[in-house]
Length: 229
Ligand SMILES: Nc1ncnc2c1ncn2[C@@H]1O[C@H](COP(=O)(O)OP(=O)(O)O)[C@@H](O)[C@H]1O
Ligand SMILES: [Mg+2]
Image 1 (cartoon, rainbow, N blue to C red):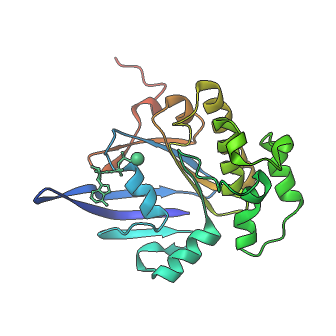
Image 2: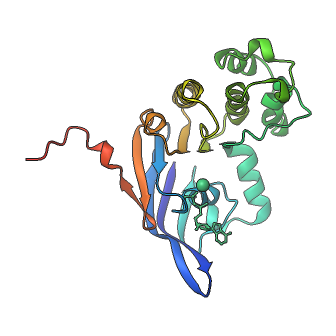
């Protein structure tokens, strides 16, 4: 589903250039999930933006769902995001003037897909049934993020990206939101990339990686049955 090879992203730091992503390689299969952690400023959001075709790599090949992102023009990138991508942000980013239902069904309508049973089930599975006609401002943070998850899944995208999805939530909501996000993506057969600082959130993922010095490494916690001599 995702194939990244030799990805370089350079930033200008004062007068010198720095490779924030440095010959990074990464692969993830369909219906797999990965949690990426790493220090602030290590390039996690930059990597997600490149996967979302919102930012360009300086070098390397980035393929998602058989499409080569780095050779796309703006129109193709728009189409890719509209059709194949669901995004969950730390700040929820719901449309304030639309009801929960209209927020959730928005990406499906944008793609000309029918609205129906699938969306009602999403609403129910995310525990939002009684909030259907409310505006986002009348919901708690945890509820807003559950709306954002339903919206990200509304058009059955191939890839779901989430940047610190629980960064603004308390422990209980963080747990619930993670359970729903990882659970629904697995159930629907979607590929999921989550950036998170939280080991509890990362525990839901199939794979845990650490972004360090421009590359992705196996997270030390991954080697759970390693016993030093
Ligand atoms: N458009 C940009 N131009 C220059 N520097 C940037 C740009 N975007 C991000 N950076 C820098 O790149 C580094 C990585 O940023 P980011 O991907 O947001 O890190 P993270 O999400 O891991 O905290 C930071 O040092 C940030 O200041
Ligand atoms: Mg970030």
